[in-house]
Amino acid sequence: MTCIFVVFFVGTHIKINITIIVVVVTIAVRKDWKHKIQDYTWISDRIIETRIKVLNRNFTIVGVYASVEGKERDTEEFYRELQQSMVKIPKNENIILAGDFNGRIGYQPIPICIGTYGEQVTNHNGAALRDFCAFNKLKITN
Image (spheres, rainbow, N blue to C red):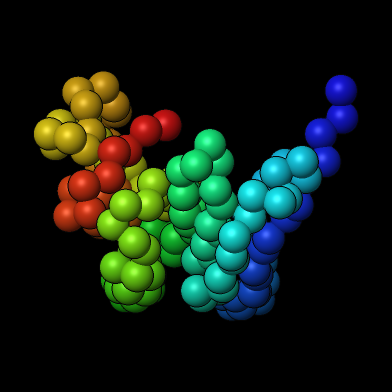
């Protein structure tokens, strides 16, 4: 069985010394759900949103590609932009936040956000993700 998708993406490239890194954020929606797409928005080179309506429920899908670990200033800017987009999503909307956060969240549980299963490693990006999800009452899954 072949499944065809409608793809929304935004991308850029970053030059680090002599290396060029391509950053692409993509949201793919099944082609037979194309009529369910209500809107899509480019937020930044690292954040894109698509709104769909499925079974009379509205969903906002936020696709992200966070900064690499060790770029604390870039990470702070990323989460500032992400928070600005989150506050614009209607409160009754179902939110799916997905992508590469370049974070290790550890196994310290946070009620309604993170369970007790995880790895021991935590990094700066993981801590930023934990704080963001706890503040916005989002669950972290893998």
